[in-house]
Image (tube, rainbow, N blue to C red; front, top):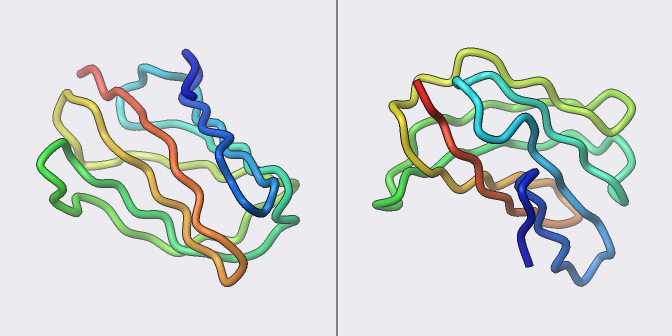
Length: 95
């Protein structure tokens, strides 16, 4: 199930990821719980499945700050990949 903040809590590991603000202008924050501060790779896919952004991050306090994503207005799938699990959320970029 998703919510207004871009929440997807479906996970076998019990981890959850929330993206906010949503919608945004290409700058947003992810709050990841249940994965400690495991480093990972953030990927952003457009509605056609095309990879538009990829960067490695090490969360601090379960938070990841993402700035200046080169994306046009639209809905995007966020994938946070760690050695422990993959987490998913959707965001809307409105420029």
